[in-house]
Amino acid sequence: MTTPSYPCPDDGDTFADNGVAADAHNAGRVRDEFAGWLRGHVDLDDVRFSDVVLAVNEALANAAEFAYLQQRGMGTIDVEAVQDRAAATLTVTISDQGCWRDPDPAKQGRVRGRGIPLMRALADDVTIDTSALGTTVCLRFDNVHAVAEADATVG
Amino acid sequence: MDEQATATNSMTTTANTGCVISEEWFGRTVVLGASGVIDMLTSPQLEASIATSLKKNPTAIIVDLTDVDFLASAGMGVLVAARDQASPDIGFGVVASGPATSRPLKLVGLAEIVGLYSTLDEARTALGE
Image 1 (cartoon, each protein chain N blue to C red):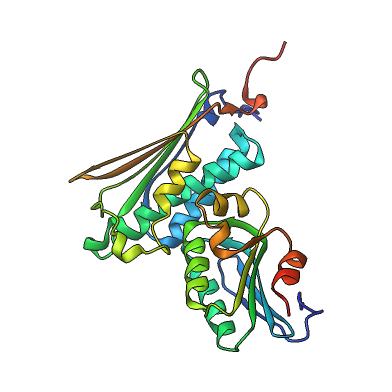
Image 2: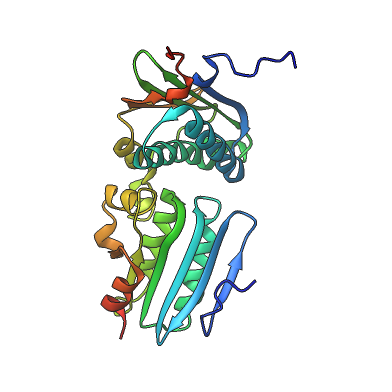
């Protein structure tokens, strides 16, 4: 009975899952965990909630499918989401240590290659940093507030 | 037990991933009803189901995403590929409504390409014999 019955107020501001195996199964698992965190800590309507989860999924899927092709698919993904109360933003960073593969329009036709356009349509800002060390996708969503219960503004 | 008890000729495939696809025939129109999640893990299931149905020479194929909670670009790619694979004289339609399905399809400009309908009745009226 000595454990605090409520979490520390800043508990809800960050979601992190590092070292996730870069495959389809784990990409889906992290997406679902992230969605659960989002539902509990961030105040979004259904449309915005779907938009955020889909954008994050596409970044995860790209990393799982393409980042480690040259390492026979062996590699990991780091995911971090931060809800900044002062700025009212949600920033989600998806990083891998693999090789960026430029989209090949000839191979994609109209069937493939919608992940990045989707991210750009769904997030307020998308940056993709690529280097020899890996790729970091940063998705920013504006006007995102924490759920009211998490704010210590009673009284 | 049999969640498609009303269908006369139905077949349900389940994977351990939360995607279920049922097949129902209305005359020569086949309706593939998907539920759950269609992402990079489960989209091959949808692809296989569509390919199987196409082999049975339907006049129209309708992919019903009404009960789909999540549709990723991998699933959208399957829908576009199916439309491209089916011969032009086969009717093709996708039923979807809601923030997780019809919204992203519209955002990437696929509504016209795959033939988007908001209800199954609407799709069957448009594509049925």
